[in-house]
Image (cartoon, rainbow, N blue to C red; front, side, top):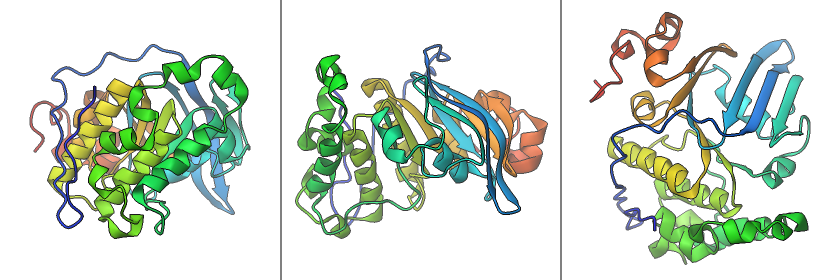
Length: 291
């Protein structure tokens, strides 16, 4: 059973979680959940994403980093169906969904959050979660015939359990507008989990949090991956925290992918150091305590 300490009050968040395991998970060798092949997104003469390819496999915890304007969120929008790519191909669970709407991606087991949490402010916290559960119930009948319901983790079967998972039981009957911004970020993650995803995309969920909250958020993300059998892709500017928790890092710069490897490999890459990380994040800085 998964336990996470909670953001206990609306007035003063107390966001803590158990420490991650000492050893990183092995490199994922599972099936490809999502394949992005040569994704390019242009806005007029601006090339926001330039021929980016990536494969996301079952069980991975992947970070995406890069300077502001690197194309991270645009790439996220493209691989989640929010933005139609100008060129390239997107395969989700082997099906070509290029140019399809986000609802098609969601029905293939993909869920995401946004830089600014998208919750229903006038609905209660519990009702927000219930909305996601209602969507999960609208999946094609073949999912239920294949026994998917029997394999759904206990924590994702009703709103109360999801609220327990993300630590918002005490806020269940409050309007979403009445909880803190950090709690709204947790709520949006809960709404995504309610759709019972296989692939969870997180876009800067640590933005605006304190240093302690960022670390606790990272630990929660890792536990969600480990105990709910998820694949997680996480964009974040809190680079030191992200590098401590992910197993693979994709680096974007000026719309291009300039690196893809382990945290140690990426922080030792001269092009990455020059483009983004700087000398303080060079080789060796991800071992032990971050500077």
